[in-house]
Image 1: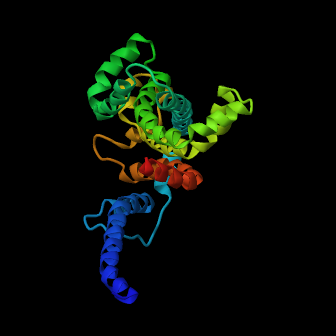
Image 2 (image 1 turned 90 degrees about the vertical axis):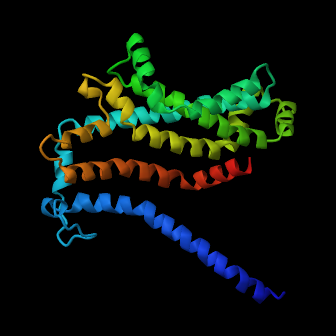
Image 3 (image 1 turned 180 degrees about the horizontal axis):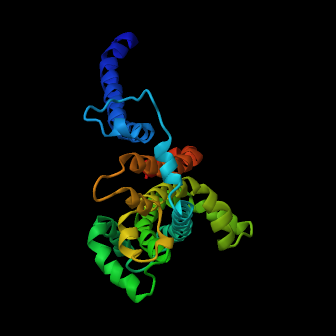
Length: 282
C-alpha cells in the first residue's frame, strides 16, 4: 500500500476525530459564552421570553452592581487567601508524602496508597455534616481555617497519587550520585528532586485551586454568622432574591469569579501540559 493511499484511508478517521473534538469544545464552551453574554446584556434582554445568542446593546450595569456590593473586595481577598493556602500547603505536603511512599519501604505502605484512592471515592456531601461537628469542636467555625483544612484534606489524596509517577520517574542512581558528590538527603530533595517533579506539582495545584476557588458547600456550611469571612461564591447569594433573581448580577459575578482561574491557568499552562503528560506515562 502506497503512502498516499494510507493517508487517504486514515484521513476520514482523523476528520471524524477532529469533528468530535470540535463538537465537544463547543458544548463545553457554550455555557461559558452564555454566562459572559448574559453579564453584558441589559435587563430587558435577559428577561426576554425569546433569548438571542447575541446583544446589540451591551451594558456594564451588571458588573457595576457586582463591584458596588458591600465588602466585595474582602470576599475576593478571602477566596484568594484560602485558595493560595490550600495550593501551597497541598504542594509541599503532597511532594513529601509522594517521596516517602515511593522511595521508602515500610509497613502498610500499600494499604496507605489504597486509602488514598478510597478517600477520592467518598462524596463530599456525605462528609459535610461530620466535618461541621469537627470544625465546631475545634472552634474553627466562622473562620477561613474551616475552609482551608477540608479542601487540603480532599486535595492531598489526588495530589499524592499523581506525584508518585513523577518521583518514580527520577532514577535512584541520580540520588546515589548526589550523595557521592556530598549532597545531603534534604539538599537532594529540594534542589534536585523538587525541580524535576515541579510539572506534576503545577498540574495538581491547578485542580486544587479550581476546587477551592469555586467552593460553595463548605463556605455555606461552616461560615454561619460572620459574613466578613465569606468568599466570592457566598457573595453571589445577594443576587438571589425571593421575588425575582438578578440574573445579570449573578452572571456578572460568575464571570468575575472565572477570571482569576483563567489567569492562573494561563500562567501555568506550559508546565500543566508537561505535568499531565507525565501523569499519563505513569
